[in-house]
Length: 311
Ligand code: PSU
Ligand code: MN
Image (cartoon, rainbow, N blue to C red):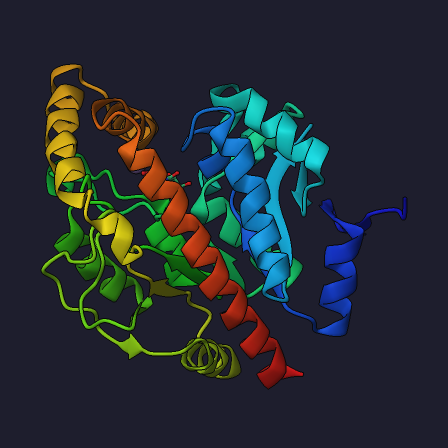
């Protein structure tokens, strides 16, 4: 096998490095969704299927994680499996955790903030995930605001997600992104989607109708050196949004339980995701997998369109 390319202390998989050198489309993927967002073995299946969807749509997938203290851009199947099996034994790694994981040569599953950071270092402009973090409910008291939002304010990477979950305070999340200067666009809808459901009751600041629209938005931001990120919110496919109301009820229960059990900080999101999945008997996991795959297809098309513009 060809040696991986090293960019400073970052390891870039050969096929990813090759694509970047030629200006071919590359799509970054995060790894906390594998370790903390879904149970084994669905997490591994989903990660592999997402990578294959990206390839089918003409882009090169680059899942990002820290393995044995080395930030890796692009994982092989063995590395994906390692991470999927580690599950919550991998460290959930947001921006603030990067030095601590590297210093002890640990295994870190990168959240949206840390994935954006490494994607940007490697020169990748488009990144797909399921949902991003946001302002937690009662965030005005707890100050629990995901570092995903500040990262979006200062790192020039476009993130394709299904919006944010209603475990969060969606109106305040949008307000906070406005403050941070994040460009937010919804895909083929005027409403900002709420992950499991298409509607949040909040209007999206900007509308895009095609992958080419998305690519032009990203190109405009990059060309003018804004330095900030873009959030492209894609609603969950219609056939899965039906279970949204059932899932909403489970979210309310899980939120109450988290409050009673005093689960806070970076443990909050993984707890809520796992509990909602138990309460809905797997319906939320099926919906989660479906929307990630849909985001991967649309994100790949955006990456392909962007590469065409920028070549
Ligand atoms: N939301 C999801 N699934 C996830 C996450 C968020 O629907 O897996 C993960 C992502 O990695 C995101 C992180 O970046 O949780 C946010 O965590 P926190 O709220 O602790 O910032
Ligand atoms: Mn938090």
